[in-house]
Length: 313
Image (cartoon, rainbow, N blue to C red; front, side, top):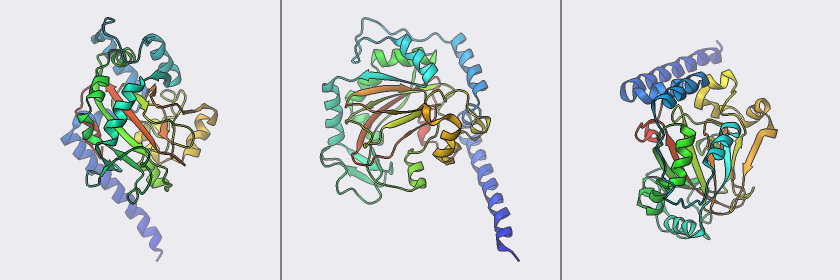
């Protein structure tokens, strides 16, 4: 008897049972998050929710009397660019702020591959990437980022909040922040997927936004962020149904449909910033020669608590 024919349906039943279990856990433990991640993948649903928020919520006014660390910003132009291109490039942190964040990163314990059981102290950027612990691809400061007063100031910066509120069409709810290293360590497809180094899109709310700042110089050898222009809308229906599982599709297949000519690699000096609608296909490319340190701050229209700790649904 062909054992393959027996094993194949068994695998299907196992996957189906696992899916049903996770769905049940999601519905009973975090129903709002579960339903959002099931529904927000569809553009028609997101548009409907955004319309409701625009009608019912007045965006918080950001006082012009309070100066932004980012200087003068054309918030309307930034939001318009994100709406068409998925991303706006051109923010810039002052060098003293970059240095404060580097000092924090070099004196604070991070966690290898975001594993709380693998703490690792960074002792200086010139040594980061040398003699790394085994299987280290990324190192995130996780909840230790709350110790940074500089990050807290940026989360409440008038300019950053103005961009977020304008794009969201509602009061910006802070979802979380992260500082993380990406290292020039080659990995297989599974490892790249775990490190968000394959094209994917996020589902953290019906409408949300992320602001990124490079804290080290980033060129094509140090793992620049990459996105596919305009893919926050007009996704293939199959990709809408798949949601975050699109990360399992080979990059070549994604590019075949959306066009390699629409891929944008974001490079810049330390302090360079950009704002992205994470519903577009994006990834952090795998560094090949130098490590990359990056800060990201996220805002949304709903408060789900720490959504990134709610795994499995």
